[in-house]
Image: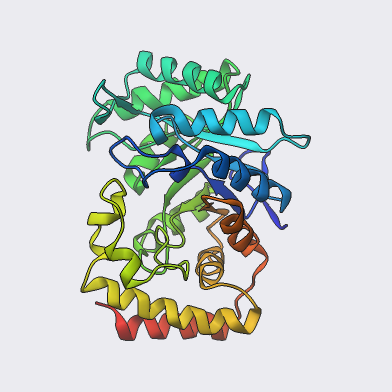
Length: 322
């Protein structure tokens, strides 16, 4: 599987990584619904068998449960061990309500909790999950804390998630930013305006999440399935999964399906490959909830779309943009 250097780090990562959001399971504010841990373990193992060499999770996924599942899985995995990336800055109360907390002492407690759940001595990439409110000095305080954790050897490299260019500049003035993690897909191209060009110029690695638009572009989503999403699945109330946007989105999937057939691939793999065509993108975070799903998408990094196919997607999307 192709690899690329992640920003200013020494990490050579595969262009597709395993995303562990959904395997956190239900019972929290942004869950994907109920999840079987055995299926989760099988999904991670299948991804690693296919050559994926990094896993992205977060403290908040499943209120710590995703990290616990990842920790148990990789502890029993034979070498080479995958890189493990996780995030801080979202805490929860006794009722499971999530809020941003970026105080230095809170981040220090989080990193120790993550190391324990992941059963690791050091985290390969530690990221601020969401930036604080605009103009808040918490950004500088939090980023300085991550830089200290790197110097102390708790984490190897440090990055951010969901930051804009202004916030990236503020962080970079304190310590180098290894990577940015943000959403990017055919249906969500906000990064193209200024974030991706900035990261490319500054040598900041970009890890894109939701390249299949949270399953919309996977080829498995239908109008009937979207209508039956359980209430504990955050997508249940997302406008992209509801009419009238849903019809446009499923039409895009059918065009991806036509291109996928030429390569013997799935629409989801085409959607992932589309994000990887951008030179600023280092890798795509791809989730899977069982071994079958993992086997169907984790090799998307090996798919190369022709310029004609990219243009075909662009033209169809422009014609059908809502």
